[in-house]
Image 1: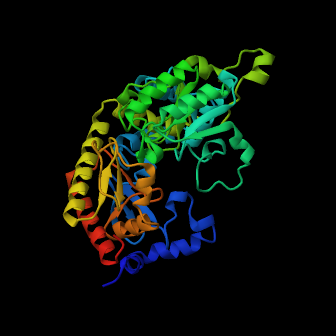
Image 2: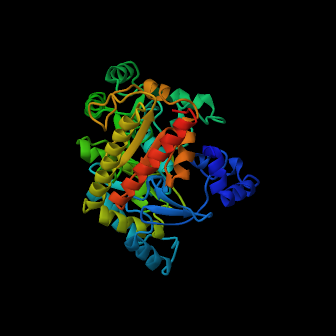
Image 3: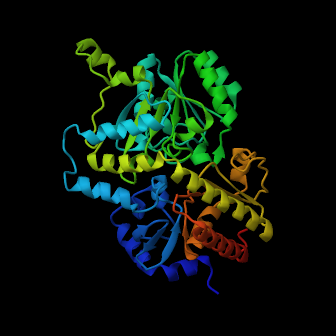
Length: 447
């Protein structure tokens, strides 16, 4: 019987050949860090609904879902029609257009903090300009973030990361304060001792889409303490926006930040990001025809593909569908069914572990028994979660699941994003694939 790695090579010869070519073209042979899979990644040809197919003709149930952008599933017919209609009218008009107004109106309708909106091309850019807005508005220079929370790959917001920080001048991080999550006393102390803090930024469900969760009670307390200290609160809802609820985590938990970074679902599967928030803060971008203001206080914000009409067309249609509440609710039901099934499977196989996650996100931790009073908010510390996953286990799980016809993310942990088109058939097939994968891992002594 072939082991996991041998079977992976047997099943994916065309992908392996393409990877050899790719290594001559791209660093690591990939175009996104999380697509770096040893000994090689799969190469996909097309996708539809909750499934995708690779160059070797294999079919997968997909839980990467465009890195979280595809709440509606692959190639949703209404989104495809909207993009095709705009494609025939122009891909880049180099001018303002009506679709950008409609897109922003959907954001304002859904996101509680969105008084005004500025579009970007990505979530990284959205977080960058949110921080710059906070600094310009307050006249202060420092920003608090939380350990391991991810806000894109820009220099400032990679502070506190333990991976991929080459080339960043450490002086940049002198303006960043990195604190442990869920520790209000630490935030209070930092704000009391340092009056140069402009803002606090965080992923509202916790680091890496909630892999190490933030407790909802902490969000409410954080809003209170930032208001008392006159410090801005920024939610990075690049993943959680429109997924945790149609109005994001801020609507689900009833905590309204001053600024919000958005992307992924916002663009309906095409590139697109935005910062949204209080009008007086957002207007730091506005011209006043005053040279002193325009040259030294105002934030300049160009961007060739800001509010690109194709992204706007896809985004408008996607948010129109999201606004009904049905896609978000269906994705959450499917994810809960999957989490429940995974926990039953772990119990039956006598493998210590825990499946958890908020709304339509799921995380799987192995090596430690589940201690979650509420499945969406794990009670284990970040240190315990990491310690329970031996080095390399997530990669072995990724390959084993691909062998069984399921694709998910396994860079920071074992994570999947469920869409509105993952039905009971897909959930049951996924559970069978997990059983096969875990059995293979056990056979090789990995769990």
